[in-house]
Image 1: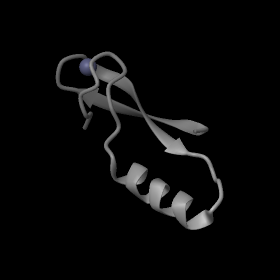
Image 2 (image 1 turned 90 degrees about the horizontal axis):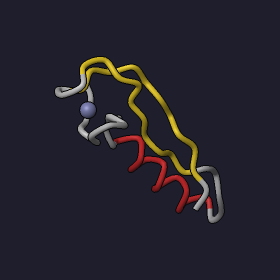
Image 3 (image 1 turned 30 degrees about the vertical axis):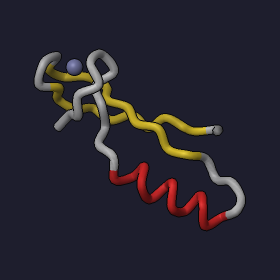
Image 4 (image 1 turned 60 degrees about the vertical axis):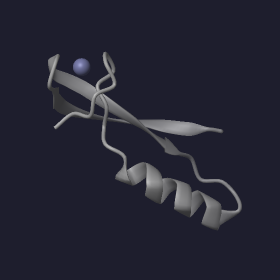
Length: 56
Ligand SMILES: [Zn+2]
């Protein structure tokens, strides 16, 4: 499943300031499936690349 990675500067409880990432699905058909996947992915937190903890 193709996806794109979003990055954001955040603070990990263990590693301090990190470039946090999360995956978002690329547009695909059927569109409503993509819309739902994108919506769910958008609700997931950004995660530390080192330990996977949600960053703030
Ligand atoms: Zn971390």
